Every structure is written in C-alpha cells, then in structure tokens.
Length: 444
Image 1: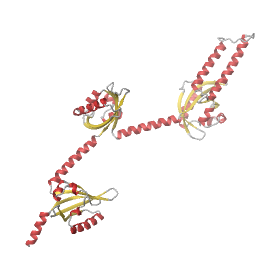
Image 2: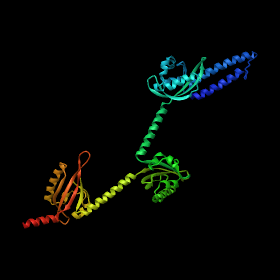
Image 3: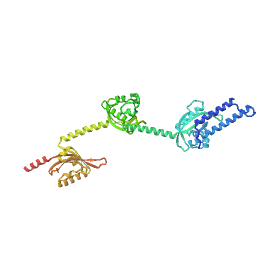
Image 4: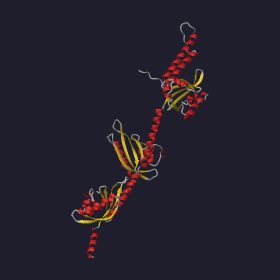
C-alpha cells in the first residue's frame, strides 16, 4: 500500500519534536555513553549524528509533502520540493535558477504588493500575518489561486522565509460558483416573489429568511430575527378570517400518515404596512423513524397582483356581459377557418340553437345555399385582404326552416407574425326591419 504523504502541519510537528530532542541532548539532559569513551566525546558525536539524521528526515518529509515548500532568500528561491513543481509549472532546477525579477513575476501583478510587501516586512523582523491567499502565475501563463503559510527561518546561517503553498483554484472556483448560484437563486426568488420557510414541529418554531420577509414587505431586523412561533406568525401576518384555514392545513400535515404528503392553498395575508395581499403556499412534511411529522417546509409566493388582475378581469367581463345582454346584438368570434369559437347568450336566442350546437360550425352552414355561396365569396375576399367588414346583411336559417335576416360587422384578429387567426364582431336580428322595408317598398 502506498504510504500517504504527510501534510505541512505534520512536518512542522515532527520537526519540533526532533528539535526538542536535540535541545535536550545539547543541554546534557540526555546522556549518550557508549563503551568506555569519554561521555563528552560520545555526547558530541551523538548530537552531531542526531542533528544530521534530523535534517535528513526533515528534508525527506518536506520532499514528500503534498504542499509546495519554497525557501526564499533575497528574492531568490534556494529550496523547492517536488510538489512546488506541480503548482508552479517549473522544474525544481528552473525554480532555483530564477532571477529575482522572475521570482517576483510568479505572483499576479495585482497581488505583488501584498505578497512581497509582507516578505520584506517578515525579513525585517516585523510581525505580519502568516497566512494569506493570492493569485499565482504558472510557467504557461495560467492564473492559479494559492494559499500560503509563511514563516521566518534561518537557512544555511542566513535569514530566509519558508513558504508552504497550496493550489486552491478548484476551491475558489467552487466558492465563486456557489456565490453565483446563491445570487441567481436570490434573484429568482425575488423576481418570482417566492419565500422559502421551515417549521420545527417539536419547538413550534418557524424559520424564515430574507426572501420570505421581503414578501411581507419587512426585514428580519424589524421582526426581531429569523424565527417566530406559529401563534406569532398568525398574529403578525395572517388575515384574521383566513387563520382557521391555515390552522386546518397545519393540522392535516401533522396528522398525515403519507410521508410524501404535500398541500397547496391560497389565502390572504397582512403586509407589514397593513395592506391586504394574497399568497399561494406549497408545503411538504418530514417524518421521523416513528412516523411522526417533525418538520414542514415549503415556499410562499405572493400572488396579490395576479389576484387583483383576476378580480379586474372578472369585473370587466361582468360589465361586458351586462352590456351585451342589454343590447339586441350578440358578440361572436371565429377561428382562422371561420368556425364559431365564441358567442354570447343572445346568439342562442337569435339562431334558436344552443351555443354548443353553434360552436365549431361556420356561419355559412346555417344559410340558404345561394346565400351561403355569396357570403363565402365576400368573406374570403375580406379575409384575404385582412380587412374589417361592416353592416353586411344576409339570410340565415333557423332549425324549423324559417329564414331570418342578420346584420353583421367584424374585425380581423392578427397574431404577432401577421397571420390572420380569426374574426371577432357583432350581429343582430334585423328581420323586422327588413319586413318593414319590404312593406314600404310595396306601397310605393
């Protein structure tokens, strides 16, 4: 089995232990006596041998380290291990031969003031942070993020800086991706008016977040934090008339036996400014090993604008229907093939057919043959030019075979691509008027 390389921290620990033993030998706390030789001579040789072995072990450990290790003196690299080759892209021989200018260029221009400024301060005996991150430039010109642990040492009798370096580019990219993802999620929640939440059943505690509070037009600071009991939440944000509805849904969630239980409901809320709004809530449950519901979680969506639009549309349709019912005309709509797809109730009265019988048929289907041919030609030409038509009079057959007269006007319906997708218009029964006109004509 391949032996795992020690980390830089482990190397430092081993070195400290070796130096402690050597210190004890030098101070005489540990005597080494071999045979009958002088204890002083033996002790000196033992110290020398121990020091040599310690340095060799330390160098071996450094060489095997998963971290890059560099020792710098006067802006030159005087020692580099194998891992530093992988991080910088240079061989050890190339690193040791780099000029001070090339060594400086190993650091991104925007980070050189930080790295080399601390390097100078450390050599000058000043206390500076030992740990920092910077962007390094590899031999191929690519940029890598480096984490450095630096310390002041003596190397070959001269002051030096020993730096342990780790390539954290992947970690940085992950952090950036995470921040980007979180920002995108936050924006998506804000745009969609969504607010996630959790509810701890055992502690009766809601856990909220900023997007949640944004829906209610408030902040965690104003509300005293991100947690709130169910009663506090109900008193603070639920419309009084809808609190029983929410309470009943919570009860169903707690009593549910299905671990995949989920619900969706709409109810009114009270914004922090006192205005009434609407939300739709989708929530799920989490059960423990005993099958008890221990947590619910979900998301609220502000649908106030949609509800207001629906209400406005309802009122508009109601006004439209009232007006339509109050007139003698009916409103109709056809598709691109001239088939009826909409009609008001008065259309039934006029045709004496149900709307279900009329929908899907063309108006020509209910005309005498000669009248149908005339109207087909007229409407086809109008549709070809995508033009409106006004006050066209034609005959129509009722189910009993009797003929009545209609006056029809319509406008073309054009989609975004400029295609004709149908017509919409009005029509009225003018049979009595036509009779009067015919009677007047016969008297002349």
